[in-house]
Length: 31
Image 1 (tube, one colour):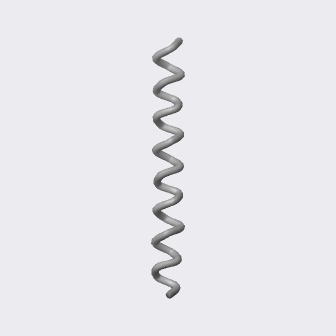
Image 2: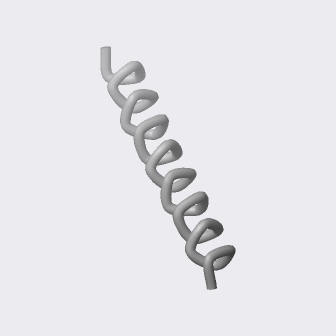
């Protein structure tokens, strides 16, 4: 159970990082 929670947290933070990167890249393109 503990490992599952850690993996989910890891995946969520990875998704957040990807979303931030996509947003940053879009802003860069729009400049």
